[in-house]
Length: 589
Image (cartoon, rainbow, N blue to C red; front, side):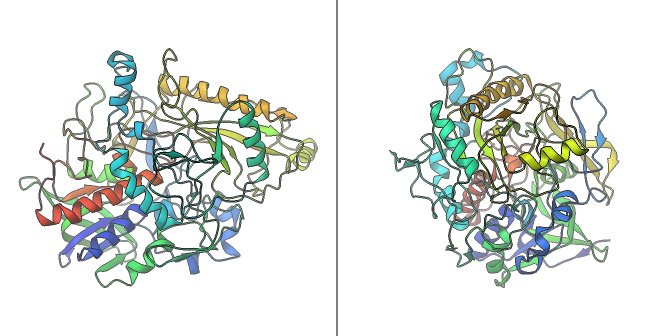
């Protein structure tokens, strides 16, 4: 029998970026809020301090900030007719654990989505015709436009002190910025980070082949900055320990730095770390979620937390798991195409080529954000007529730090061990970097999430089953983008080029990917094709809201953090200005 707590105005599941944003907006509106986090509380002062935080073995190889797969994992397969097997070790996409979530160990790359990506199906239909979109390409519009989200992108960038250079300021092109971006209402809060040698080589080569390079927008701040919440971030140290690590100089924006100090000081907010949410309490007849049941991981006690409103702010896998376990919405069936929960799971389609150059490059001077980017082949920035695919991505030099265990690139044909390997790794350690393509992952009929019929997690719930493989659209798009990467690589006059690796085979969880998972609880304006409405309110329970990448109908070719944060602010605005005045559906089914 679960211990029943006193009811609160809102309970949030997950305290990463979306959880901390939503908690702050709701407490400012006067609500009492409980934030539940599966993992431990993490304090930058205590958990991200030197010298311990720069331990590559502990954090990069042994995944100290990540979820333990013995507690929870997922099962994987390529197609619906296969048997899925559980991941026993994290590969390409470990899941974060603890207060701050993925916001503690992200790289800081902070994009705004192209305006056309938010109305993708409408845009492609109008430009290429309805018959040009394959039936298995189950893309949709988000249900919200860039102009509606622009103030919220701006707000998140100012929260993080995002560094960069505007390319489109109030409709006017700005030299040195991204010429393809949507119109911005303001310049970035801080100037771009210092360009690394790899970034300079890439920039020169990209210009040679007619592309338009610019500094990558990054929430690793270039100078000391105090955000609108009164929290101060320090200038980036270019230490190269961003991905998989917390930031010892507080220069990489995170919920722990930007919002949690304010929330922890607010009497209307209560953080409960080590609280493993087991299930939602769903009243189907009333179409309400009355609270959540969670397990205190330190005592093993089962606790029910009633609330007037429940907001799922966890990782996409967890948000979808809670919906499916509670029976909220119809599970997706890839055969019939009916159902919505679990539909349109997407990842990211990435490729690269390694360059071995004459110029000396200090690999330890790096940030999580790649120093420069090219957006000429993002989304529908180029004509897709006759290409046989839709989508694209940005190109960039991948140089985020020369950590000695993993960063040991050698030319093709080098032995993997022995004296020849030692000589090659010594000769080329200061003379190599990769150029990468960060591509779209557009929704495909057979890519989805459901509950595994065999395997369970540590508290007895079915694991989430991920059915995913590269679609024909992904494969053709990856070949195209990789060819563009090779154009830049050849223009860089590298002494040796590695082998290009477009994603033409099956997906694997070993390397070359990202932790940018989206879909499964997608947003829209039609309950027959979406789980939540344009305000991220669940169609089946009007007091239930879902945040994060789970609501993306497909995955644009950008890192998702900027968009998921903007959507959280957009939803919070709707809740505080509309829903609280008249609780109930904000859109009619």
